[in-house]
Image (cartoon, rainbow, N blue to C red; front, side, top):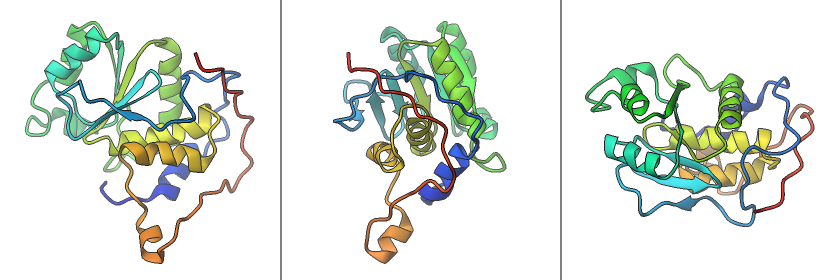
Length: 205
């Protein structure tokens, strides 16, 4: 999961034309600024960023979950595989049980191993964000998979073009594409298929 295959992974998440965009985005983001690192919330593996009302992070510990609850988070979305989640050398506690005990919703959308990046992930995230209008957390191990999901979500549901969406992911946890590094120049993603109408961005509040 460490290699960066931006075009293939974003295409896998965006490939379904059946993911209709709503008339207004579920998350209001500041398009003039990239996601911001959260420096006053310890307990995450490697990194945690915030973009609008969404936190994108690596694995939280139990104390971090409590702090998120205090900040109004009601939904935890985990992109780690079930094997990872159930491996106590990987995750030292029962995360689904801890989330439930705090009165938050836990949503497992595994990506990794034999479970690929796929458009259903975006659809499930979108449905969850419609149910939860306050702060939410998207996480994996070190925010790598979560960054790809958030970049693709921005392109599919927040009206961002692919380069702008990918830039938001790179600000969090997506490293430069190896092909771009080998060629010594920036590469631009383009849509190979017609896209559904994109939502009209709501004014910043």
